[in-house]
Length: 498
RNA sequence: GCCGCCGUAGCUCAGUUGGCAGAGCAGCGGACUUUUAAUCCGAAGGUCGAGGGUUCGAUCCCCUCCGGCGGCACCA
Image (cartoon, rainbow, N blue to C red; front, top):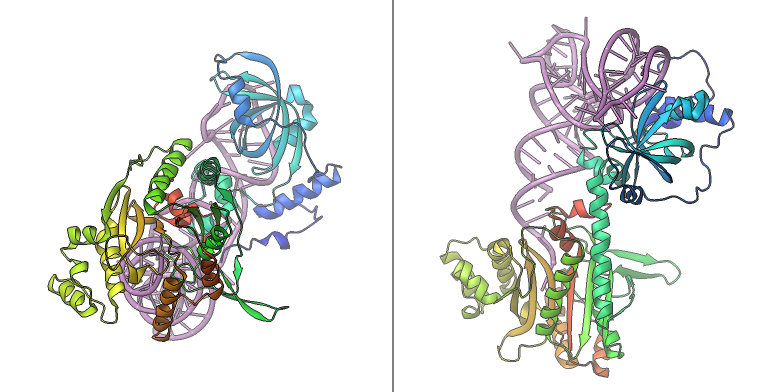
């Protein structure tokens, strides 16, 4: 709703008496006038543009009212206009910042002055001008020449209050970016989070790889997939829910340290921390276990935080706290999951402590309930929860000393899970048994059970070195780095209803 | 899927205990050579999310639907 302005219905070439023009038709009419005057409203390029921030940097020491002879060429969008007649000021915005332009009739002559003044807010222009400091001390470019680079046919958001409507901000992110310096800064920060994570891993001997997004069989996480169809092959394909299994096949292949940053797709509900497509970083390292992975993960996050100038309240400095999962649950709920390894016993223990017990839940689901309802919200400072029940972890290796547990951790920050890692299970027979167990769950109606992946089993049979692996939710990491509580704020185009 | 709140001009927001719907910004016409949310004068701009119902009369009350937000459920 609300996205179909009447632009397409605007009169073209109607030079009749000035009737009430709506804001769209007025811009159309200006476009026609420009063309009639021989001005190309959509030229092809504009060379030699300097970022506004570098113009500012070049004149950081300019005294109030001081003139210079320093010429600059900038380009951007007209964001504001003050004054009319023989002199006016315009604000020009590019990705790096905002700068004031001064337009003078005595410099430009009456015709060009009129043309510059009659441009619309939102039009893109290129400008040649000389820097000076205004009477009020504002760095300004006195416009000697300008070129329309693209006519804007729709009005920009309100210049003072900006774009407030959340729905429009998400559906038309370009408007949010035009209106909000903060939005631009946020997504630049997001890009830097990703590039710094890359830089960190590259420097530590990892190679970046790309594995299939369209997969004949999905796996590597507990989630329902999106299903699609390949016409030429006439077969069902799934959008990946994780990169895990393919990446481990690369470890089998001898690549030793690999990572992938890309989209995963999970066919589940939306929430402030769930978007159906999201960006995941996974890495795998031969000859490492989950403790090595934890150490590297906390260093990576600290590196990213430092590089982007993180200044949030949560202290991300390593080492992070480490607790066992069972200990964290016991500590916060009084329930000892390891002392109640049967479904009914655990359910009874939870009931006895006044907790709601979903009747259909299995033992692992009850553990997950305890974790997500009673423990996760308390985990604000970074923490690793270690050693999960094997029932919850089909790809993790058995704990070297704790029966019934696997060597796995999840990292939590700000009350959110941000990472999931294990000492990878590399015993193919054990992995096969886990798949077979999952098949029984699937037969019992678990829609998220792991499908049996014979190609993966065969890869493990080839021999996979002891390996540590991890998945880090990049969107959630960006939420933490930038202090946002909704994933939609940090995803450029979040999922919306039609 | 369930519950609650919300949807008024291009944008930001008022408002109507049910009686021709208002402002600011933007836009249009005009004045102005140092402005910073420029100022001043003038004239415009609306299917009040959509559909149905109640009523002499509905933007307002009721129902359904669409969309958004929050919570629950689902969901590593």
